[in-house]
Image (tube, rainbow, N blue to C red; front, top):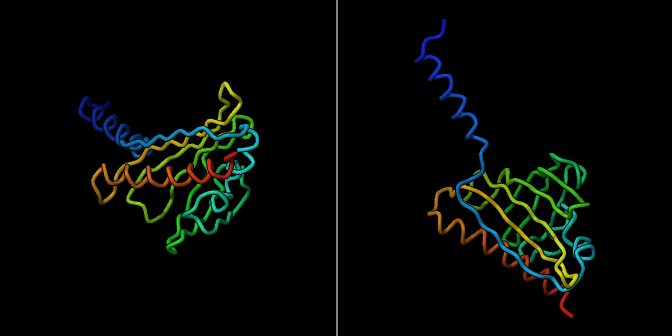
Length: 165
């Protein structure tokens, strides 16, 4: 027969194990309206292997699988030579959205999960939303959010510039 203390210990262990996979405590969210249709903008940003085409800090991208299959990993090389390994968590061309996690990289974050989504505006333009949750690793929370926000800002500015009329 289990004692109350044993039940409490088992419940505590299960709760602790479940939090290992929880979203990070910090979040960054950016939105920008792109002067073109979501379908057209999706052609640029919707391929999991195209970050090197539209983000100024990424010089190359390569996949170890399909760009739409969950579990596919991409290796990004940054302009300073650093590399990032990311894993595709979900992908929906119909919803114009995908989510991924960082497996390894130079950013001072852990438990990083991000989603990029396009939705139509009332005017028929694309609203690009890039969000993430993560924990700071080795730096203050504010510094980690500043770094991730800067990554999003520079990438989204490049997308907007690509479609300027």
